[in-house]
Length: 401
Image (cartoon, rainbow, N blue to C red; front, side, top):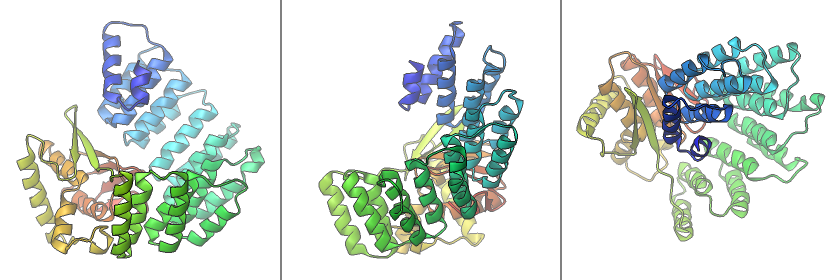
């Protein structure tokens, strides 16, 4: 039952059932334990993660590699790469799955060089990599802009008799595309020994959105629409590419097409945990009992940001709005609301941890950097792509995401 809850996104229910089982002294197995650990990672609560780790430390599972591997993944998803590494370091008999999990943890936090260094240590320890290891390595490279390192790693897979799969090819397309090598990425796709699927064309479309490349974006979208005609995300990405190029007539036509297909854009939402309670906010959300205080803090925060020199990048806003409307829309983005709530609900200097279901937009990313400086706070945001650690006006991603 716990596994079913966890696999279907019902993390809170999985954790609650686990608590009840512990309270009633029910004998647990590794499946129920690892499923609960996975649920803790989904929630993203560092306090809950530590509670789970403490439970494991006093249980029969404390030396189980499969359980400790799950803890590494959990801590990474909760925003603490250091605690992931602590679990890794204290585990004696590390298998390839654990090494790969730690490399993947570095990947999602954008620490590409650390991932590569760990891979070198893995080889030195005599542990042969598998195909998952290389997916993690390539992901680490793409999030860190390590193009040539990633390229070399992809081509050294044959040394370990590992045949690249779609996921590896998609990582390379993403690696090249994010770095702006769009023509090189397309040529790589054309020379693939297999038919490119959704993940391949999806990676190229995302790169075209980042770099505002209309012709190649249209080509990638055309392939995607033929493979999956009802994907909202692909339609929205193409619409964003058109909007960034101010091709509003094409944006309108695409919106009509989406309406005819019954597709609607996914709503953005962000969550933050305060005093053990998870609060979820949507764009412009006024449902919270303290919404007046939250929006007063938002207004105050926007004034302080302007005084500090912040101004929105209107060109990057993917809607045909005038400047005043654009500014209001951005201030009401879910992560800004969650941060405002965090500021009024915690003592000064407390780290705020936010989970967002979509990719952070350029303006909110820039705003949060400045918020971390003016409020003297560390703000950790997990978006759809990776983790962002904001501190002293900077972000760990180096504005590369």
